[in-house]
Length: 149
Image (cartoon, rainbow, N blue to C red):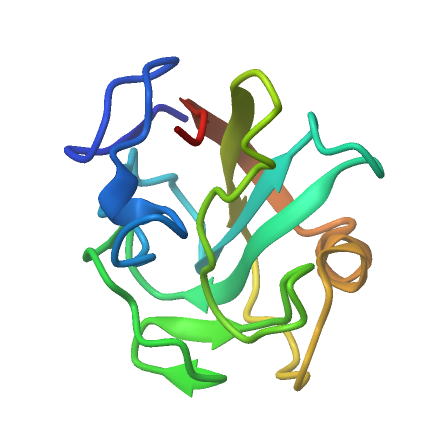
């Protein structure tokens, strides 16, 4: 599955609009539709964080193969069910690495699932990964980098 965005090029820098230094809104995302997929899920991870992988977004039960820019930061909407990120908030919170760090990488993982998953409030990325076990049909990602000035 190929994941695309009009917001940045794969392996390029993410514009500050999508980070804590800007509007902190989610970028538009689109991916190849997967035959037999009932829903999709997205987990955004920063593997370069000091304390280990840091989660920036958890959203699942996405009914289509695209998301518009700026998904509302609420538990449930027509776009899907959003879980808790490692900032302790619902929805997307973008890159915000310490200013002294070199660029961090942000992986936008998209999972194609063969079912609609149970709605759970405040689900974490680890909990979602457990729920998805045995339901993944395909997976893809796009990666962007960010360094604070």
